[in-house]
Length: 447
Image (cartoon, rainbow, N blue to C red):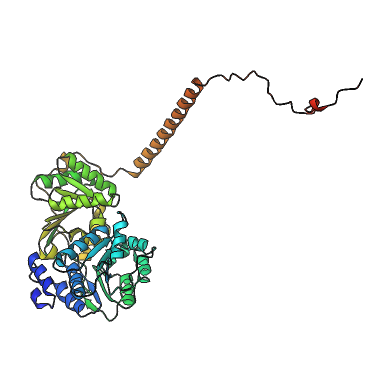
């Protein structure tokens, strides 16, 4: 069924045509009619399936023609990147309508976000923590809210946002339409859905989590310290125009990005220790093609939507199978095709086995014919714990010694410049103290 078969406003059909969207994806075909009918929705949707448009289109449609300067829709997202992506998708879909949206997340000033509350933008897209920060002030009122969307609910559960969500619900009207989208349906999310939703339309709730069918997946067995050399070899072969590379830790992301830059590869990194301005600039540079490689931690697994991204590479095997699904889901989006490669060290075999059990298939093992791991210098990106502790202790000892030397130099300089007190030999002017301290008050003897 084409989009023209859905009862959407003509301005939305116009935007869809300009974006090149002719037919809805399966999740859109099921969720949009339910949303237009005012029904609550519980949907299990894999990343890259088009779920953002599945909840935005019916909301925008129902807001067209309504009175303005009142926030009527709230979308909760787990990460800043995903919140920014949802606002961008909204602006593309609502380009021919007066409906407005604003993002509310941490890492940036609260002033513009406060203005969005006071101006009453139609749609707020927020991360839970920053939204609760605003709720401490009287201007942050959502008394007229009619639509609530929880996007990537399982990711918010993983990040510990479930208590925050329950606190947010206390600030919202009880009568509203609620749409909950999650890639998986753990018991905690199922329980939350039972509390929030009224007679919902359930979509793919029993579907097992799996990557999109258009993604070609493969595994490269390799030693941990040879991973960087293997990645460089694959990049230099010219088969990957752009690659999103995931590491397990922020420190490994930093070191890998620096290694690639040193080898002449344009690379940037994005993770939780980077400021919002740095993360935004890195993502924008990757989308524009300025950076060939973007090294990221799982904070970016949800929220990066790069058109025609051909390759995702798991530099480290994720510990949780769901993270693997969301990582590789950055390619092969919207029924396109892509490739996802995973570097597996011997000590990561158990994590890979859990992923294969979760997706229900054994991933093919691949080797690069012209790559000799023994012929490449090892590039350790993770310093052993004992070495890190020893380095920290040595640095602290060095800092203490430096501080003592500085204090000694300061004391010596003060002593050298100290002048003698000219009054040091002068008798004190005050009267003596002690048993005879009042001698000057005694009456002289008579006669």
